[in-house]
Length: 457
Image (cartoon, rainbow, N blue to C red; front, side, top):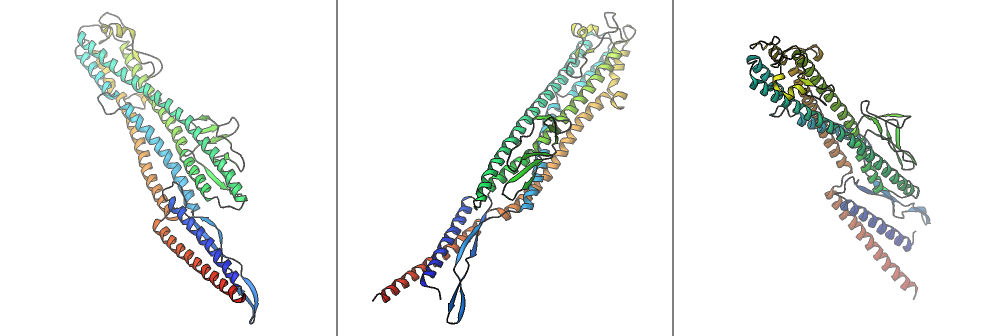
């Protein structure tokens, strides 16, 4: 049968085991509000039994417990789903934010919007058609046209600024991606070292998971766990974090194709903030092109008609607008700026002839082939409507993705999150077990002391 010293060993091992269990419980409680923390559980195992000969034969005696490791509680499936939805949600949020800025730039409907200035200018052309000899009507028309030019130029310049800001954010985001990639590689090295030493690097694994989740908000990714505890990270066909190396994401990009390249390999960006920025750049470029088409057609149509008219100075062939590069250089012609009397109202020069002004006024509703059969007003209204609809689409996507992400996070927390009630219950359980083991050790110590005294007489 086992000796008293075996019992002391069993009690001592139990004390060490339940002390470790209390430490793990305390660690869980301390990190209840730590971002990304995964609750841990002490795995307790039985030590191998002792086989001893007794009067009844060979008998197995238990030898107590040992710490088999500290288990990190995670659900890999939920983590993977979280990364996917987080990446898509970040893309939608980036697109939504950029489109909302464009909506603010357009300012429709509003007192200072382009559409209002366009209507006011056409109203002035109508007024001039009714009063072709009136200098006041010409002054009013020049003022209204100058206002339209100013508002168009303002929209153009703010869209150019938005484009520059988005490009700056692309550069910053690629830098953040590479910073996180470097951090993941550093954590990989420490995790590999601790794993090889037989340790449980649970806190490091949590830190790496947080970095992975932050990375998923920036770009689409997939991961591959390795046997040595490291994690490889891929962005499409680009290896960001290998088994032993970090490979920066190239900074050369083509927003139109949503790709980055190192000159050899082309990597497609399909998720996260970076994809949203590329999509936003494409949207802004498209809106600028549509604005330029509107401006070019407005200038061409009005100039074509105006050149046929005779102004109050008896001159014909004068442009009303000038410029050749869409909204970027739209302006009133030098002649119109210099003298409103250079504005032509009629084709004959007769005092009551307002035919040219009337023809220009009718452009407001006239279908134009270059604009797909839409009038100038309709074409610009379609641009405004398109921006609003696309912004709403991404807002709706974001709401769905945010709701789904919240649901997934709740599921993850139910698995990996710290439940204080459960931890406090465990603490009481382990405390009582520790006290009981201490009591056993005390009793065995007393018994051993009495035996020594008895045999020592």
